[in-house]
Amino acid sequence: MHQSFIAACLLLCTQVAVAATTQVEPWGRTRDGDLVQRVRFANDRGMRFSAIDYGATIVALEVPDRHGIARNIVLSLPDLAAYEKNQRRYAAVMGRYAGRIANARFTLDGSEIALTPNARGVALHGDPDGYDRRLWRREDFSDAASIGAVFHLRSPDGDQHFPGTLDVSVTYRLLRQRNEFSIEYTARTDAPTVVNLTNHAYFNLAGAGATGLATHRFQIMAERYAVTDAKRVPTGALLGVAGTPLDFRHPAGLQSRLASTDANDVAILGEPAGYDHSLVFAPSAGRLTLVAQIDETLSGRRLQIFTTEPSVQFNSGNGFDGSEVGSEGRAYGRHDGFAFETQHLPDSPNHAHFPSTELRPGMVFHSLTRFRFDIIK
Image 1 (tube, rainbow, N blue to C red):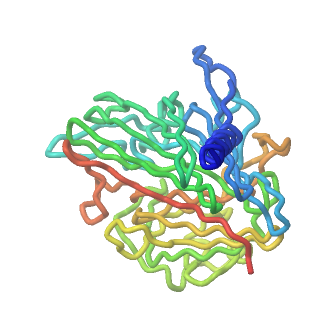
Image 2 (image 1 turned 135 degrees about the vertical axis):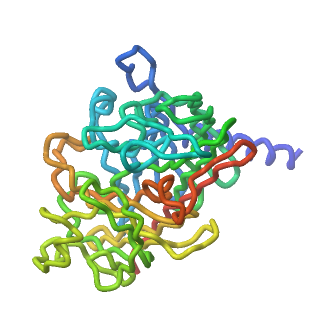
């Protein structure tokens, strides 16, 4: 009798915990009339995340500071209409190929594949109909260690002019007992194709809506960077970061580098100065590896990033110009957030010595990135 009572109580407590940590609600309709839902998850340590079906977009990632006060640290927009017309791709999934492809074309198995060029003559993020503009199918889950959602998308043969039907799954997972969030991608194809997937989140660890990145210190374990042309397409050269403003192997801030008038720094960071560079990690054979640690001194938040990917597109929020107002009611200005897009290199299909992005029938594309949050000691 006593054991049965305890078992019943444990079952009830488990059911209450699951109900309390997952919430699903309507979040509007697209211009085409499709219903979009928002799902919210919370763990046992005070961390929460929210996502919507449109673009498999993360709309909030709330993390406690040194005082235990949770605040959203992902830049976001106030409603679905704003996401449908935005140009910054806030925390959505990029595909079929994240990043630029030169001249909007590449050769695969002897056949030239012509993609859709943008105004600069390059293909970028699958535009004009990228995965960030699609309605994904979502399945929520809850297990002993984590809670989250799996987003599914079928990209048919010829979609964005890429060959092969591609079945994509993106899993957002929040650990119950640790403030750790992960993004896991899988994809399968029925014909040879190329794939490069990432999430386009912008972060400000002081809290979304905070001004600038002056209180952030970045350590990025990248040894090389991809040299690019005037259109920011890789030339094929991979050079060492030593002696450049791209060297973050030791913790450093951005402000002094962005303000540098040194000719070499200006040549790399541009005018006005900004980061939008592919940084290449030491080869890890696809093993999950610590690649960055970012500290924010005011809140005390520390973010460690682990990934199986060979590179990251590091961006200092150069495109924010005050024209888009965030969920906090404040317009985002230049350098109000940073992106850390773990991925393969842009234009890899045109550079045989870059890590391959080819995917063939029978193969499984797999990519994992973890975001572990802590407090600066």
